Amino acid sequence: QIGMIQNLCGKLKNAEVKAAILRDYVNRNTITIKVLRDNLVSAEKDKRTLRSLRDKCLTLETNNVNLVQSREILEQELEACQKKSVLELESTISELEKEHNDKHNALIKQRDQVKRENAALTVDVRQLQ
Image 1: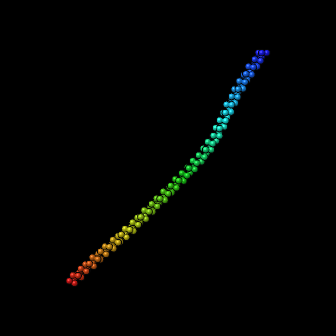
Image 2: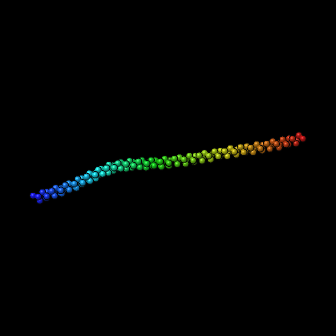
Image 3: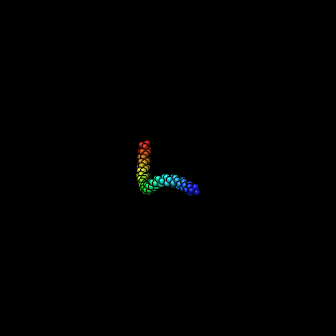
């Protein structure tokens, strides 16, 4: 009977050791489950963040396309304004040149008239002497 009791005590000790090992496994698994749940929560947050970043990226790409189109339109408008300004300046220069030439020609006519009148007065003065 002592042998049976010792045998049972040995089995009991083995069972306790196995139970301790299983408790250790359960504790480790519990910790692992908690870490995996935390990782899952973190992954979900990362997923939301990635979605948000993707949406922002798409918005930025759309804005960039719109800005490029706006820039092209503004460049065309600027070019048109520059051409118009050049034409207006050329027209103004032509008008000023014509006005200058007209005044110059008028002054030449006045000078010639004064010379003729001066010559006539010189003749009159000589006749009076």
